[in-house]
Amino acid sequence: MSTSTNSRRLRESATAVVGSPQSRRTRTKPFNWRRAGAWVLIVIAVAVTLAPFLWMLRTALSSNHSLASNAGNLLPADFSWGAFQRVFGLQSPEQAIAEGGSGADINFWLYLRNSIIFATMTTAGQVFFSAMAAYAFSRLRWPGRNKVFAIFLATMMVPPIFTALPNFLMIKNLGLLNTFAGLALPFMFMTPFAIFFLRQFFLSMSREVEEAAMLDGAKHLRIFFQIVIPNAAAPLATLALLTFIGQWNEYFWPLLVGQDESVRVLTVGLGVFKSQSPQGAPDWSGLMAATLVAALPVLILFIAFGKKVVNSIGFSGIK
Amino acid sequence: MTTLAKHAEPAALPKPGKPAKFGIRRIGDLKIALLFIFPAMIGFVLFFLVPTIRGIYLSFTEYSILGDPTWIGLKNYTTIFSDDLFWNAMAVTVQYVALNIGFQTVIAIGLALLMHRVAKSTFIRGVLLLPFLVANVIVALLWFWMLDYQLGIVNEVISWMGLPRIAFFGSEQWAIPTIAFVNVWRHMGYTALLIFAGLQSIPNHVYEVANLDGASPTRTFWSITMPLLRPVLALVLVVTVIGSFQVFDTVAVTTQGGPVNASRVIQMYIYQKAFGESDFGYASALSVILFIILALVAFIQMKFLKGNETDLD
Image (tube, rainbow over all chains, first blue to last red; front, side, top):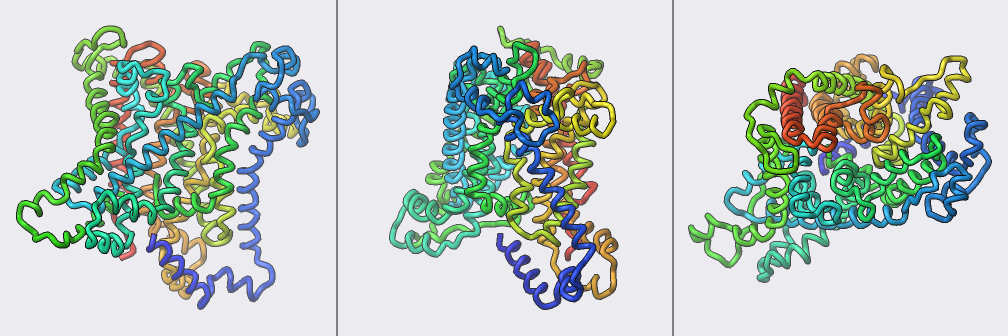
């Protein structure tokens, strides 16, 4: 982290003194074609990124039957809250079918609850246990420490599909298919990335307070809970946020072990939703309303903590 | 990343009040360390180490979930070698990776340069990152709708321009390029941010010297930015290529491998073998091969792009 802030500071001060070629030219000339062209590209990139989301919203607020005749209209076709009502189960099956829905029970609330349970369980376990391991790798001295750390890191190279098949068999043999335990267990204890991320941060933290506490006879458990965790609140929150978003979006593993309604998460539920269309034509507005609501928690988290996420990708390097 | 880990040699906390006896120094904090590392160790052994070994073992067996695995030696591997569907899956996957990584990397470098030189606001970086934070499944469904043959807005625009409509997910020649494009859209902002972080580590004085020497922006880009960016770019490429080889969610939600075999990527094939045909031995052998391919790709890329060295010294 320090190197990136240093270099940023260095660059800023250098810009202030010398001025980058572009900014000097802007100061002397009122209009700069190169710069204007660059901004056009940026606007295009932002538009390409955002337009599909707006289209999602537009479709969700449209009526299915009007979509065909107004396919090119930018505003919602025959504005209606019907799609959202279908998603939240507020319409009777007859009404839903009349509006182009499947009429089947979608159980959106259940999937939403399941996603919250799954993502929260795995995030809490993973961040906490990884923090404990990171403490052992950064603050304690024990034989074989660096070897064990290297082996942990090496597992980052193993593709998830490779362990998914044997893990599925194990969860099945334990009788944990279609349970939250089966869904969460493989993610709950650690990921090499989380340990690596936190270890790097712990190593960069000042140890003065910890050493003082050590002189006062504090034990490692107390130091970990009362000094290290509070001091590392920011990176722990960033890691928790990234983990939560990742787990919220997880599809492959829940598809394998969580097919049953009672534990089906949103990503799996949406996939099913798409293939449920008895009349042949999919319920596009219902589907877009559902995807919008499914994406909403992530969008809210991102609007609230976006800066933290963006900057963490800057310094944590590669996830 | 591993290089970083190697350099960071943490010094132990001094153990005040305790004379450094030989025995204590050798064992150090082993007891308390075992306590701290215990949960992570359980997770590592149960869900990474054991499955890795078991996966390799299963690849030498015939196993259909019912009953016990039977050892059949290398038979799975010899069958794979003459399995047309496997070679098709490899060809499809490689085609996907080439399109996905090619476009994504070029666009991301462009965006990173723009973020670095022109649009410095965190807000713009945040907006460009947005698609990456939305689930693969949601992104896939969104584009499945926008690229729909009958009602999709993209085909509306195409037919409005007087061109014939395109069956993006429904035709054999378009399925893979379409899926590759959808994931370029999802990943370009994220990849750009990674490269952006690399650009920030290039010291400014290098650019100043180039500027004083009257180097053109194009020349500066090819002679300074790209060479100095190489280590970061190598790492980004290794990570994105490995991720790209494991494409699954988008395919599963949209085409499920079709039409015919046009988008049956390797992970989809493994999934169908294991869970569609209950052929866990064969599926395990396929994932061993995928694992080896990924390791080779990472190794060749690091070697070829010299990702561990920097030209900054």
